[in-house]
Image (cartoon, rainbow, N blue to C red):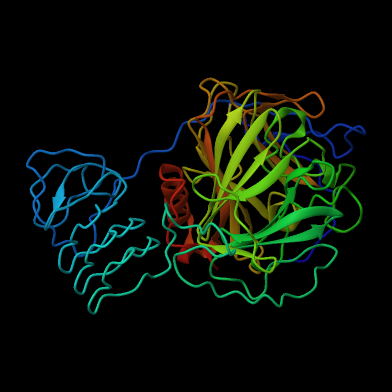
Length: 479
């Protein structure tokens, strides 16, 4: 995208009582003031998704009337139906093999002939796998069990369990095509090239800060890892064509996008906690580590960590978050919040702000450049951002669910620098106030192909909010 210097001032986007991404006033905010204007509200949580039928199911009977916690039972069964995508708890499958919640086949149980083990499910220990049936997408191979006769091997899916390796830097679920001979880092940073087909993590210096460089969710992210003065948070988010949708270089000149009389240092994601927790370029006493599903540390091999579902924990004395990285999206789980918090995105649309005739933000109902929140509620559980430049092929989105009722956040624009969009934050730094409490809230974010259109983009984000900690088909993410 061509950077075009503009003298556009923040323009008011609110009509009547609805508060849009509101005006922050002229471009010449006083020194030290991060932003001003706007009002917020509480977020409506995303809806639940309905699970699907295990593919190729030729399973045995499920007890009549059994409800369960999974999805449709295998074909031929007479049991109850529930949501979630797994067979009901206690439903027998073929010879002696009982499914449990989460799709785990019992030790020694036989999977039905031609039946597929559920996505993310663990194959039986010592049990025979199906004749002609597909193995689980992202699931673990059996210990001592016979491989299928004519059945497909795992397709390298993003299974939600058992999909990260404990050592060796490689997660199970299929080989990842990654070229370790990456070009040298530039001062501004850059995407992985060629872009890998799985989640990839390396450690680099970026904007003079030690960072994890992460390929996930259709983009390349730089997360300050705490090794430099306890700083943490995303300071860059590159789309596939090389636009940095954050670009917080602490105003050192590495990122050349305009900022007007404001600062790059204000930018970041998720800018989560009081005391600057996970706000990049600001010390917060934070450390990070990569873990398996049980919280055990993962080891890098030759400086690289590969997988289809990788987890990173970021923590200080007050907060702890667990980031789940998939090829399809990223999800944030709150493990600890001893103080109030928010989900706050501050960054330039498409890498630089070009005015509302070019830069768009879109809410769930398809409204462009409209209201997100008022003081007591939000009108959309997610928002995505579009640069109208035809060379920009992806949108950036984030969504939140299960937030504190009656609490919202300010959203507005610094015309030359960034959009400021929050769920849970009021006011401007250093006098801002975060509002959310507890650990129930969840956020998802990432890139998506722009040409998919609003209906497909919205459906994708809604599905990720409904099932945030399971990977999905990432085809639509890529341009």
